[in-house]
Image (tube, rainbow, N blue to C red):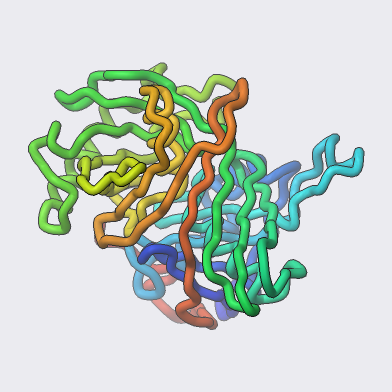
Length: 337
């Protein structure tokens, strides 16, 4: 990125978790598909990585920022045979790099695509916004009434259990894939609860668990090693008031100590895969550490895993023009965590 270049964004939050969509000034993002683009963007010193740091790091962002670059969609043999392809691709990023999946971001992109006219939307009923992301093709099903968006359902890639009761940092975790690999455990197993006042300890514990699982064979994706490795640690509490569904409160600590303010879309998919494996067929109401909710259910079983649908909503928070003064000694910024 050249000094003095302007970058425009439209920002959203999904359940309290930020999502910054770059609409202008993005660098070139070469690659054969979105997963390949992720690998190239992750290279140290790449133009994409410099812009990621500029938008995520202080003073323009913060340690828990999230966002994406819009990229061309992938092409599959099915598309050439007349099946519907994706409307566009998305390359997700956070303060530490580029992720393979982002459910809250997919929900925000559904809102963005409809509100900004990127897809033709029905004023009443459902509009499917199809996206290619590093983990595969996903859908944001945007429900509108009277021309206003009421909710978005994230239809994820097949999700599945990788391993049960794996030792990590003196505890036992279950590993599941929901577009990224998550280690899951009850917060009580760490002597904690999913409450804001426990957040510092939850982050420290998640870092220890993730470090202990680095390179562990149970964290490998069975089909593509580029999707391997623990991305996040999910702590959960069981809640009462089921009424035909399971209710849990969770906090997902991802990347290097980042905290998801939403119930975490791809993490919710991983939780659904684990619950389904346990024989649970009721829908899941997933609450975040700030009290926001996702409603989730399994809609299909495939040889690759269960297909989750996760309903939430995103809201636009602003439009921005970011600049880097060529004389700014802080350059693309810094993080303190």
